[in-house]
Length: 243
Image (cartoon, rainbow, N blue to C red; front, side, top):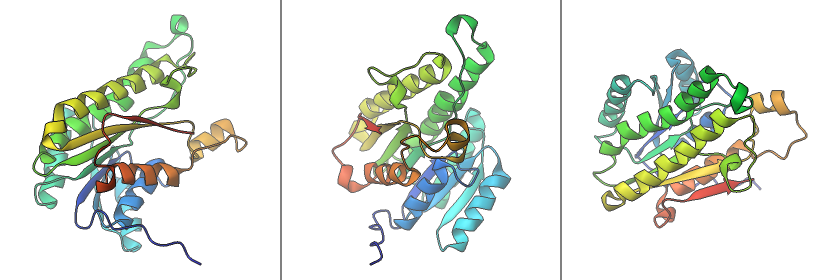
């Protein structure tokens, strides 16, 4: 028996997924999940050509996906990109999945490379801040949901030695999520964060191998879609661990 298709909870609504530039990443599966649930999906990546290649592949599968190239740490460019996305969606955005980011070890703090530390802050916290700042005004009309990517490492008892840049950036993402949840609740905007252990991606398989108990990309996508749906209307300001 074939599994039932996902409920079309986002019919005609605009959903934005950041960090969708290469096949095999988390963002690709998140974008496909939203589109399978009826959303008109806008994917964003620094590399507009790569994003368009992925969008074209998804459109070939009958999914409504459009690509945008943007450096999310560039405030002006990000504001312009979200204005274009919102205009295509009738001036409204229903969901934002802040998936853009990356991981790098920075070594012991006393011997760490400041460039790696700043890079981690930029690609993880800076990208989430930039996208959220540009998106929120287009959610206030009828409410919406934003999901951030934190990390299990920053939860109580997590191991952050030798990865201070990554850990600091993800702790910042969590604080950003909580600020948005508190500031925008009256406007019907919810914000939550996922804190997964390692996710099964090509990069993690190359770095860690296949003997690790990975979180599957499909599980991440399903939880993000749930948090952005009406079924999660009472969930906001939460950090949800995936292991």
